Amino acid sequence: MTIAQPATRPRNPCFSSGPCAKRPGWSLDSLSAAFVGRSHRAKGGKAKLVEVIERSRALLGLPPDYLLGIVPASDTGAVEMALWSLLGPRGVDMLAWESFGKAWIADVVKELQLKDVRRLEAGYGALPDLGAVDPARDCVFTWNGTTSGVRVPHGDWIDAGREGLTVCDATSAAFAMDLPWAKLDAVTWSWQKSLGGEAAHGMLALSPRSVARLESHAPAWPMPKVFRLTKGGKLNADIFKGATINTPSMLAVEDALDSLRWAESLGGVPALIARSEANLKAVADWVAARDWVDFLARDPASRSCTSICLAIADPWFTALSREAQASAVKRLAALVEEAGAGLDIGGHRDAPPGLRIWGGPTVETLDIAALLPWLDWAYAGMKRECSAT
Image 1 (cartoon, rainbow, N blue to C red):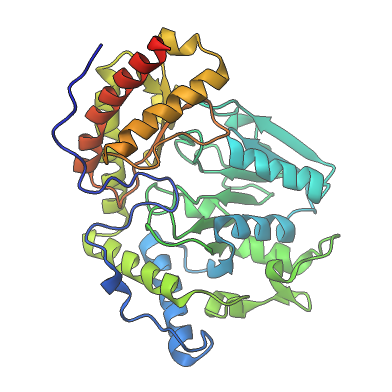
Image 2: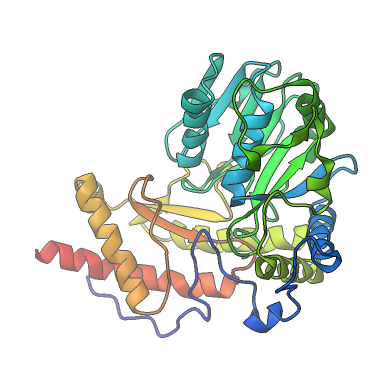
């Protein structure tokens, strides 16, 4: 089947799931006030770092007794800092349904070598049994599976009276999904997802219960400098007052501030959530009218509105070997990219071969809508090419 090439392209063809599209109207001029050529510990530099913390806190609605700090190595560094610093005193339930959750399991089992670990896992497209989580144990989970497009639909499964800590990797959920902060004890994210910021910097929010754990528990393993949240058995409070552990990029800091101000101008997190949900709806309406494509997430309630992952349902495609599927999807994505209609839309390498479209709040729904006909065109072209060989 031949489909005519669409007449309209997205104004912004950037659909990468990290680093993600810049906010609408962004330009390098947005960084003109960056505090560069000076120490980040100088008064002006520290003020910028504190501003990121305070604007983020206000936008997200963190409880007043939660701490928030900027930490090294993006969301990965923030998660590792939480795992290495907090885990050990209790058994831990590790939830995984995509590659990042599996990575946290590997770190806890192979690197920290904790013995009392329960794995609650599900394959790509599904969630594990959230009701099996034991509130007497610590719990580590991703709110949104960036590589599977599966999110937890709500926080009702988290016991408000839990004894253990909840450690939540929220990097592709923060600023785009409603997080029940009072039920989350250590929460991590980066600027490069829903804010469209640059890489290398992470954010770590800690509840009073997490701070109590830090000050009562000495990990049994050596702690790298970039993971150390305490000094002399007490919390290093300076980290949460703009004194970062290592040198931050003040250009990236300025970029984060620009995104935060943009989010405020729209009306805050509710407006950002609405933008992401509108992007998901545009894709869902398109999928519902086609038989060659479907969501990787089988339950509509758990479909991500940021990392929108699509599976190819055409029987011709599903009959191919995984290697052939991966090659076909790569070609599909290449056709879209060569046409200038969509960049970086291939699924994650660990996921089943398919497509992944970032639908976070920096992406305009009009651009999502303009991309979708190109997927029809590219799929037909790819299938025609493959069938001819």
